[in-house]
Amino acid sequence: MTALPFGRLLKFWREVHKVSQEELAQRLDSASRHISRLENDRAHPSKVMVINIARVLNLGERDTSHLLFSAGFTPIAKKIDFHGPELKWLRNAMILTLRALDPYPTTLTDSSTNILMVNKGWVGLFQESIPAGELNNIKSHFDFLFQQMGASQEFKNTMSLILMSLQQAVILSNDNEREERLQELLSSPYVPQDWRQRAAKLEPMTSFRVQAKFNGKQTRFFSVSQTVGALGPNAFVSEPNLTITTFYPEDEHVDLSSLLEADLKHNMLFY
Image 1 (cartoon, rainbow, N blue to C red):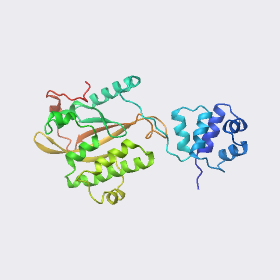
Image 2 (image 1 turned 90 degrees about the vertical axis):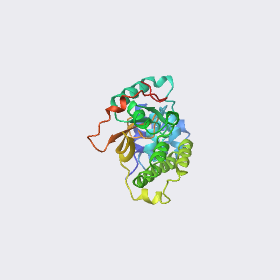
Image 3 (image 1 turned 60 degrees about the horizontal axis):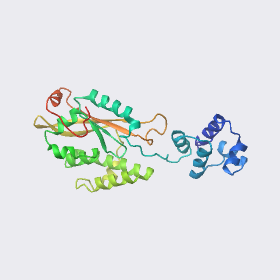
Image 4 (image 1 turned 30 degrees about the horizontal axis):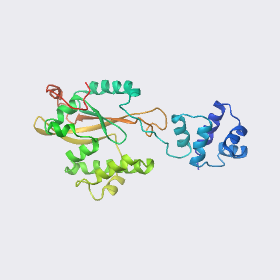
């Protein structure tokens, strides 16, 4: 069995901070022999031990997460307020990104699928079929998809994959907000009873098909997602963990430029 990389990473950080095995053991109220066994993969640490090692070595959140990840534990991700003043630069970058994707309808969501921003193409597409007040009150990207497309038989497999992704994220992270979102989605009358079995037979993809009304008729789109997160092995569990989801017409000859011609207003449209 291949050893976990924890021992190598522990040795790396100990050498970075110029701390001997004996000194580290003393700080941890442990034995230098145990530190040696950890580094040589002859012992496996508890999660508490990993956190204590990170604390005495003064590792930051990123490197603590890497150390936990290397030992086989789920990193601890601290929730970050996307709208806080320290992330103004990131909000500006996301506005430029969504603007560049116009006229293709695009949303920016957080790790709990809450919608943080939309672009003009998204507002233009959905204001055709959804009253302005209702469109402004949409909070969750997946709630929205389930409400709009849940009755479609071809969306059943996609729905199952979304639920399986959230279910496993809840198990791995024990995140209450994700758990609440999962339960909200499961309450949809369109969820197939065999969603677990369906999802178990399917591999997740970066895109899936959706439908929306455009110029008075149902039009098929590919929904394609990109992740915006930290670099490194814990990119998908660190915060802020953002997803950009864009709808591209399945028919490449469909011209969406008319979506930008109307007077577009939405409380998540920031340009």
